[in-house]
Image (cartoon, rainbow, N blue to C red):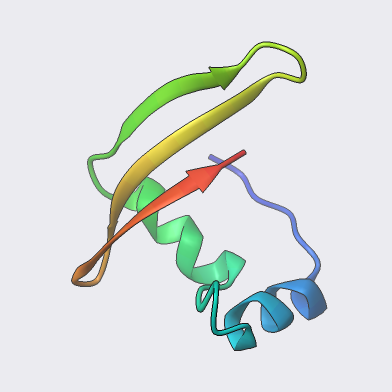
Length: 61
């Protein structure tokens, strides 16, 4: 899967204590086995759940 993102926004997300993960780390979810399902039809959204290191994350895209 190919990713494009704003590095400044990624840094802000990583520094936010509520989030604590940037886009670079979120990409790791897709580098291992993960579960994916459609979250919404309008707008089209998907959720992927997988491991980043020893933590389980959900990524909505």
